[in-house]
Image (tube, rainbow, N blue to C red; front, top):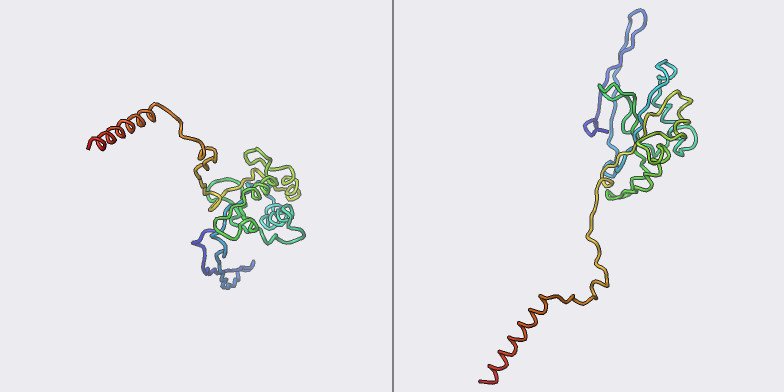
Length: 209
């Protein structure tokens, strides 16, 4: 969700009958920011298409797809999975592409902004897309949405926040490297010869005086 959308929004709804008489009412909508928005580390995206544009297929497709998706991902009975946080649903503006659905699984957010359970996120992706493919939907997902006459064109995951961060640490020094003697080379010998010469010079001066 765009943070610029957070706040109070007022809409005027007007209903008009066949005789031309109308009535209006004020609708007030409050958009609140997800309280754990700073912990969001991923979102899934489905690109969809319809078998046809007839009203029985298109009308309220968002709710029907979300309910099917909730059950497919293990949400159980009717209703939406409480862990399914919808980020965006609808047609991309001016792109001419089909509808898309984006959501975050809140059970995979963790308790800290540095949490990134990539393995668990990829396990969910493997339910949605064929392993090793470039977003090709899984057979199981396609079958789950087929009764709605909705086809999945692609299924992908996008990493955010902590899942984008990469921490590179220098390789740990091996213990055998710490205990191993310094290798002998020509430079070591030169240094030793210089030390021995200086030592004898100082010794002879001390004895002479």
